[in-house]
Amino acid sequence: MKQMYFVHFTNVFLITILCSNIQTIVGAANDSNVDENCPTLANADSLQYTELIQRMTHVCRYDRLERPIEYDKETSKRLPIVVKMRIYVYLLQNLNSDLLQFKMHALLQLSFQDKRLAYKEFAPERRETILGQKHLSERLWLPHIFFANERESSILGTDEKDVLTSISRDGNVIISTRIQATLYCWMNFKKFPFDQQYCSTVLESWMYNTSDLLLEWEDRAPISFDPEMRLTEYNLGQYWHNTSIVLSDEVNMRHGAFQGNYSSLSYTVNLQREIGFYLLDYYLPSMMIVAISWVSFWLQADASPPRIMLGTSTMLSFITLSSSQSKTLPKVSYIKVSEVWFIGCTFFIFGSLVEFAFVNTIWRRKENIELKKVNSKYIIKSTLTPRPSRRQIGGSLSNDSRARSCSSLDNIVSSTESVRNGNGTVNPAFNNYLTVHPNLPIIRTECADNVSVCSARSNNDHVVDIDKDKDKDKEKDAPTFTTMTPQEIAMWIDRRSRLLFPGMFLAFNAVYWIFVYCF
Picture 1 (cartoon, one colour):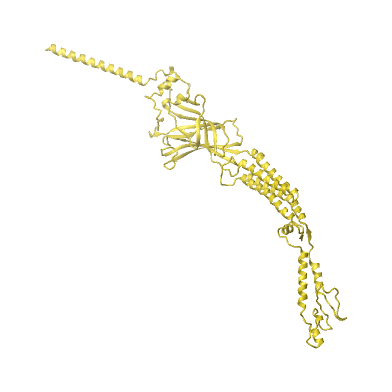
Picture 2 (cartoon, helix red, strand yellow):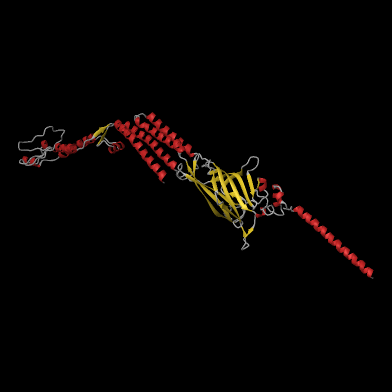
C-alpha cells in the first residue's frame, strides 16, 4: 500500500516539473517572437542613424497616422499640437496684372514637438541632430498645410525633392521645404500706374481643426526676404503677418468635407509700382504727340491736306500708344488715372481738329464782318452768327422810313391853305407841306430824294428839315465799327489758339499731377 502511494506521488511530481518546463519554453518562445516584431532600443548609442530611425518609427512604437498627443497635467485634457512656422522668400516675381497673380519661390519651415521621437533617454551619448531628406519625412507624422490662395504650387528639386528633415534628441521635428507657388492677389487699379498693391500669402491647416492643431508664427524672424532680391516694376515696401481662425461649414467648404474652426496664418507685402517706365514710355510720348498736333495752328487755314493729315495721324498715334499700355491690365469697370490722362490728351488733339474745321469754314466766307470791338467776345460772336453789314441794314431802313414818311404826307390836306382859299378845294401843289399861321414858323417835311435845297415859302416862314436833324443825331450817337475780312479773322483765331491750347494743357497737367500725388 505504501509503495503504491509513493509511486503515485512520484508521478505527480514529475508531471508538475514537466508542465513548468513546458511553460518556460513557451514563454521564451513568445518573448523571442515579440523581440523580433518590436526591435529593442538597447545600445541605441551604437546604432546607425538609419537603424535608429527604423526602430523608433516601428509600428509597435510609432503610428504616423496619429498626431502627437499631449495632455494637460492639471485637467488631463487632450491638448492640440502647436506647429510653428517660418518662411524665407528669396524670389518674388512681378505681379501679373492681367491674371491677378504673382509667383513666389520660398523656403517653408515647420517645427513641432513629437515626444515619440525623443531619443535622449535611451541614447544619452548622442548629441547630434538626426538629419534626413524626403525618405525620412515619409516615416513621420507631418501636419498638412496648404496655401489657401494658391493657383499652383510644387516642391523644388532636381534629382530629389528639396525637403530637409531634422529630429533633435528632445523630439523637436523641423521640416524645411523649398517650394514655388503661384498665388492669387486681388489688385486695385484706380490709381494705375501710380498704384500700390497688397498681396497676401495665406496658409491653413487642411485636416485638423483648432481642437487638434494650432498654427503659430515663430517668435524670432517669422518672415524674411533675401537681401539680394530685386523687382523690376515694383518696390517692396512694408510687410506684416497675422494669425486668424477660419470657419469651415457647408457653405464655405474651404477644408473639404470637415467642418469647424481651422487655424490660419498669413502675411501681406506692400508692393509700390515704379513709374519711371511709364513716364518715359507713355507720359512723355503722349505730351509730345499732343504738342505735335498744335503745329497745325502755324499752317494757313485753307491748307486742308496737311492740317487734316497732321490731326488724324497724331490722334491715331496716341490711340495706339494708349492701347499698348492697357493690354496688360484686366478689363475693369471703374475709371483709372491713366484713362483720365488718355481722355484729357484726346480732348486736346480732337480740339485741334475742331479748330481747323472752324477756321477753314470762316476762311471760305466772302462777306466782310463788322465788329464793334476787336476782341474775342465780338469776333467769336460774329463768326458764329454772321449778319449783313450795318451800312446795308441802315441804308435799307432809312429808305423805307423816308418812303413811308413821304407817302404818309401825300394825302394830308393843309387846313391853313384851305382857309386862305376860302373854299373846300385842295391845292395839289402843297400836298407835301404842313403849314400853320403866317406868324408862326412853318415845319415842312418832304422826301429827301426829291428836295435838294430847303427854303422858306416867305421871308417870315421858318422851315425845319426833321430828317436831316435826325441823321445828324444818329451819326453822333452811332458807335465806331471795324471791318475785318474772313481771312483776317481765321488768322486771328489761329494766333490765339497757339497760346490757348498750351496754356490749357499746362493747367490740365498741374491738376492731374496734384491729384495723383495728393489723393
